[in-house]
Image (cartoon, rainbow, N blue to C red):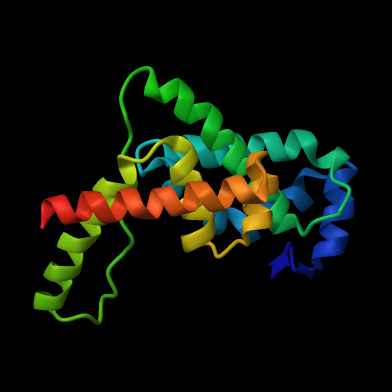
Length: 182
């Protein structure tokens, strides 16, 4: 990627951003904006996701001088996004519950199959939306993002065993909800 005609690698951008270079941070945001937004959508739904993504990136900019590089930048941004989602979700839950956005349909899918997928997506989104925030976060991080139980536990501040239990209960609850609707 070029910025102002100059190619810069990620390590250089991180060092510059840690020193307060907003252009370097802007390039990093450009690289990670889609993954931050997608995670936000999956955690809090499409209505609250823009706020979560924006707030997460603002928090990342403020915390950038303290970024130690012990984790990959993408992982660090995901952690900030998860924490931001939890905070904003709590605020939003005082007003209205937000729905989990449904995954996009592949445009090459035929119209009949697309309709079936849309229906399944809607049911799944509704089922996931009925989970507790803790179960929902574990389910999304593990099943959508493929994080290990240990990573999920560290991110959410719970033990690996607790992450496994919550995931098991979340999957069981989703199956039960889907069984009720079919």
